[in-house]
Length: 256
Image (cartoon, rainbow, N blue to C red; front, side, top):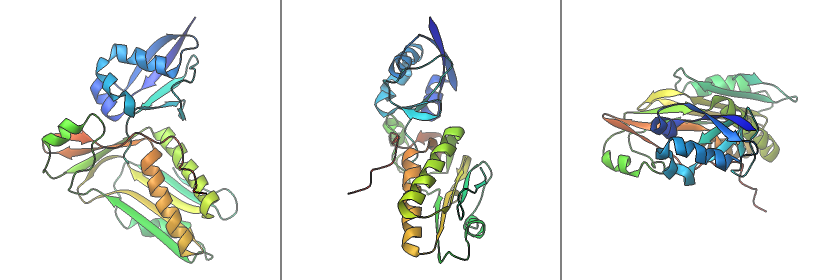
């Protein structure tokens, strides 16, 4: 018996393979690693990237030893870059969005207005924007980065596994509420091309006290960069370079 698996490719893997998804037919009981090897047999150019690749089975990070079932979706997650309001328990407000349209620094005021209550004495906002200097190239992109060394970045181009990214951002918000007691948080990220100086990500936290608001905002952006399947490429006048590090499947453990 055989299982049919749909493999989704993103960012640098999508470019190297020249397609966004591949249908594989594998023996029943095949592992994720076996699926990767079958994929590489079709697209050998992907092989060198294996040390930096992480996997997600049906939208959840998974170990390469896990067994696949017929009809599963396997997402190959290359190095990462680094919705609407949801109200749950009393006082909880979450704004989690992936926006294709531009927004500017004024988004902080918009989000603060939507989040804050009369109980909140602190609102902390963070803005990430496209800078002129180059970042750290993803594994396998070192030669292309060297070709553009010393040149100014003209824009960043973002893409995402949108369903999975939203789920992980929700998990990060859960962790923030549990760790810091901050229940009102906004996580907004751009998709598509973001020109030099334009805003790509915004984080806003609202809490009764400033320490919790600061800690929650810092945790949010750090975990987003490390875990969310959102990829970015630096755009230059005559090419681009993918950035990032291997995705971290879960949160860092709290220090004892």
